[in-house]
Each structure stands twice: as C-alpha cells, then as structure tokens.
Image (cartoon, rainbow, N blue to C red):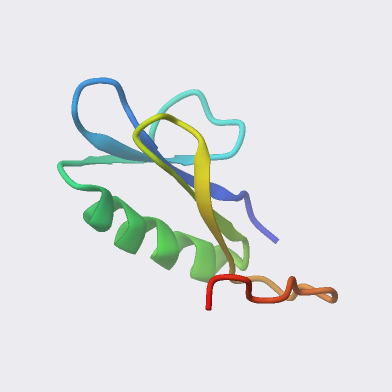
Length: 77
C-alpha cells in the first residue's frame, strides 16, 4: 500500500497533490477538480487513500482505493 494522497490549497491560489509525509507537492493545479482527478489516479495506482481538503485546509472528504478490510459506511448519500 502506497502513501495517502492529499489535495490541499498551496497558499498561492492553486491546488496541489502531495503524498503523505512529503515536503514538496507532486504537482500543482489551477483548480481543485484537476487536482482531485490527478490524485485519484495516484491513489488507485498505489491502492491508498485520497484525502481532499477544503480552502480552509480542513478535511472535507476521503476516498479509499486500497483493500480495506473494514470499509466505512457511506455517510454521504
């Protein structure tokens, strides 16, 4: 299982995808949607989790793409 991927604002009006524990962003994007799509691809490839942060930096959503033996119940719908 690879590193969890985080989609966060980078402070310059852009969005970044960053692996958990990494000091540098993997890639920068103009929109959060672009960053989410890119991060999702990495998370699927590494069988990890995609953690999406809002503009305030707080976690607003998580998606697991790994083999989770105890998946959470979907509370979004």
